[in-house]
Amino acid sequence: MKIAIDSERCQGHNRCLAYAGELLDLDSRGHAVVLGDGTVPPELAEDAQLAVDNCPEEAISTIESASVP
Amino acid sequence: MADASDTALSDYDIFSAQFRNCPYPTWAAMQHSCPVMHSDRLGGSWMVARYDDVRDLVRDNVRLSSRSTEVGGPPEYSGGLLIPPITSDPPRHELDRDRLMPFFHPKQVATLESDIRALARSLVQPLAAAGSGDAATDFAQRLTITVLTRHLLDVPEQMQPQFIDWTLRLLREGPLDQSVRSAAVREMIDYFSQLLDQRADGTGDDLISYLSRAEVEGVPLDRKTKIGSVMVVMIAGADTTWSALSAALFHLGTHPDDLQLLVAEPQLMSTAIEELLRAYAPVMLARVTAGSIEVHDEYIGAGQRVLLPLGAANRDPSVFDDPDAVHLDRKRNRHLTFGSGPHRCLGSPLARLELRVALEEWLAAIPSFEVVDPAAVQWTGGSVRGPERVPFRVQVSAEGGRP
Image (cartoon, rainbow over the protein chains, first blue to last red):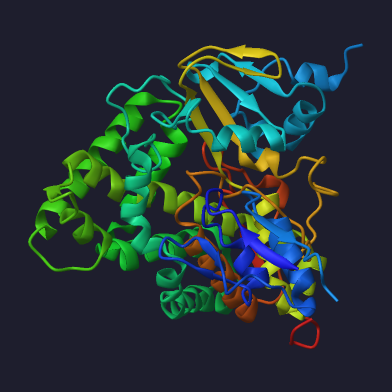
C-alpha cells in the first residue's frame, strides 16, 4: 500500500500528521508531503487510513500495490 | 401537515436567544427538509446547513466572494472592513495568506508550547486555589488574548481589556448596530496604524514589525493591507479560540463521564480535542455571491450574503454517526471547524496548541469540577458562538483527593 497527497487539494490542516506522522512531513507552507515513495508498512496501514478519513479536503488517498506478496 | 419544525423553518434569527443558545434543532430541520433558507433580517442572508453544501460553498472562492465576511449589515463592499487574507479573493488571496504563514507554520507555532503552558498554569492555579471562578473570562479569554498580545503582536498587557472590547463590539454588537461596528473599526485602525509607524524602522520580530517592513516585489506593501493584516490576527484569533476553549470546558463541566474519562486516559486528548472542536465549532462564515448561483433549485442573485455555519456541517447525520453526541474517542472526524479550501483557518495550528495545552494544564490542576447552573449560561451568536460565561466550582472527593 502507498499513501499519496494531492498537493492541489491540500490546504495544510495537518490532520493527517496527527495520525500518520511516520509517513508524512510538512513543506515550507505547512502543507503535507509524503516521505520517500509513500510505501505504507502493514503495521501503519490503519494510521494511513485514518489520515485519509480525517482530511477535510479529501486530499489523501491510499493505493493498494498490485503485487504485494 | 404542519408541525413544529415547519414553523421553526419559516425564518431564522441568528441573534435570537433561542438560536444562540441552541442552533442545532434549526440546522437539523434544515438538513432534513429545507436545505436552503432565506432571512430578511440584518441586511438579508441565505443559509445552508448540510455538510456537502457548507463544504462546497466554503471552498468556492470563485462563485462566492470574501469581500464582505460579516454576518449582518450591508452585504455590499463599501469601504468596509479589509482584513486580508480573510477578505481577499483570488489572485490576491494567496499572496496575502502566504505573507502571514511564517507566523502560523506548525513548526513555528510549536516553539510557543512551553510559554503557553507556563501561561495556562499561571492562570489555572489561582482558580484551583479559589475553588471556583469563570472558565471563560478568567481562563480561556485571558489565555487567548495574552498569547496574541505577548507572543504575536508584542503590545502591552494593559491593552488586553481594549482588545476584548474591540472584538466584542465588532463581532457581537457590530452586526446589530453599524455605528458600534464603525467606531470599533476606526479605533483599531488608528491604534495599529500608529504601531506600524513606530516599528517601521526597528528590527522587531513580532508580526507588526514584520508587516511594517513588508514589500511586494521591492515596493512597500500598501498601508491598508498592512493594517488589515494586523487586525485580522486579532479579530480571527481571539474570540474564536476562547469560544472553542470555553465550550470545551463547559462540556467537561457538564458531562462528568467525559471529564473522568479524559483525566483517566490522557492519551485520548488528541481525538477529544477534534471531537470538541467538531461538536462546538464556533464559527459561522459569511460570503457574498459573485454572480447568481443555484443551490438545491433555490436561485440566489448576485451580491447576496450566504451564511455558512461550520457547526451545522459538523452535525450532519449523513456524515457523522450519532452527531449530537460527543465521543471523545471518535477516530473518523472530518469536521469543518477550521473551514475548507483556500480560506482554511491560518491560525488553526495555534488554536489546536492552545486548546491542548490549556486543557492539559486545567485537568492537571482541576481534575474534577462542575459548571454552576449550566442552563443559565448564555451563548454568543453571529460570527462566533461560545458560552459567554462558564461559572464553575471545583469538586473535591470525600477522601480529599482526586475522585
